[in-house]
Image (cartoon, rainbow, N blue to C red; front, side):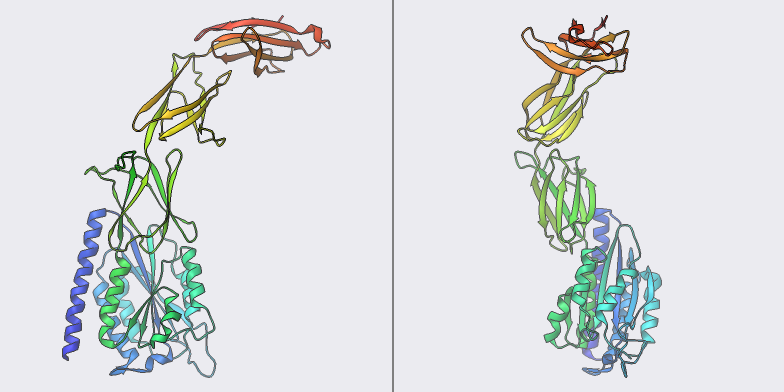
Amino acid sequence: MNFWNKYILSFSKKIIIFTFVFISLINNLVGQKVTNRILFIFDDSYSMYAPWNTEPKINVAKRVLGKFMDSIQNIPDLEIALRCYGHTTFFQPVRNCKDSKLEIPFASAKVNAPKIKAFINTLEPKGTTPIAYSIGQAEKDFTPCNNCRNIIILITDGIEECEGNPCEVSALLQKKGIFIRPFVIGIGLDMKFADALGCMGKFVDVSNENNFYPVLNQVLVEALTRTTVQVNLLDIYKKPTETDVAMAFYNVENNQLMYTYMHTINNYGQPDTLVLDPDVNYNLEVYTLPKVSKQNIKLEKGKHNVISLPAPQGYLNLQIDGSIYDYYPTTIVKKAGDTSILNIQDFGKTEKYIVGKYDLEILTLPRIYLKNVEIKQSSTNTIKIPASGSVFITRPAKGFGSIYLDNGKTLEWVCNLDNNALMENIYLQPGRYKIEFRYAHQKQMIKTIEKSFEVKSKESVRVNLN
């Protein structure tokens, strides 16, 4: 073994050790279990017979990939698979542009690494280079999986030869969330082809056979490195004290929901740490009332990222001064001056809202409207209304009628009576009221019956429409 081979092997072992330590450290820190699935797409087209420094490319690839498989088979939570192209049909006299096959489906690295190593050693280059077709077929290779990161590592010595568009296919499948941005390893390629391959994903050039192994390890570390994220929900003092609210991360490219969490302050008094895929740009939605958001978040790979956004909150508490039976009204909450309904809040409950002013419509009879109710940081604004009373209305026959609030000068409509009921019980806020009623069989307006009554809090009154 020459000096360079010894040096490369020594350097590679250090990288592999670093990989194991780094992955173990991240897993211990965050405690989230994510399965990484790597699909290796391997070029076995006829051009792999071409010499590369001292021997054919295929020989170097077999040797290096074999050792690489030995090094990754004990990595936890890693599944691998192998798709090859250009390996079943000779490129002459006609190119077979569908010469691509999933040879080894996904299984744990411990199970599949020896299988992939053995299979690669049997390969003899034959055909053409259908890169676009192979990437498109990868959609079927990644079977449904919960909490998985799908990764492609394409190893090729040439560019597309079948008139496909690998960049369009890759971009489409990334947008669909099939896999994250692929890694493309070009072996012995002219650098003028870098742009043609780089548009598919992250392109890494292997300029000579001696750096093939380090490049593979570099790609592995980058592919498996999980990036930590801390979301700071800031109060009015710009301190990350707000918490206990749901939040969601969406893929910027296709608006696909990627992660949902309930924001938490951990045991150290800091916003808890998350692990997110660093190869995706995110839109963050925090479901406060109203919600707050941050757009197009780009994470720094392999580092602890802090995402801060203002979310100062206070509380609104709705109470009834006593109660009558089981009648508890509800309340429509809107931002002050806004017509959109923000929330429906029941009495007897406390809800959190972003600091600001709100309009309340309390669904009592009659309605109670409160404008510009202020919510302050970490404070509770308690709104208390009188308990309703009730009126029990009876009549010997069906008819038409309404209840009005009587302020002594004008009447304010409150509600209509049930035309088909002979008895009904209606909850009303304390006050003086009138009923205007006419029996259905009476066809003269002069037959209108008017009844006045008073409702007191927590008391019931009877009205007979004779």
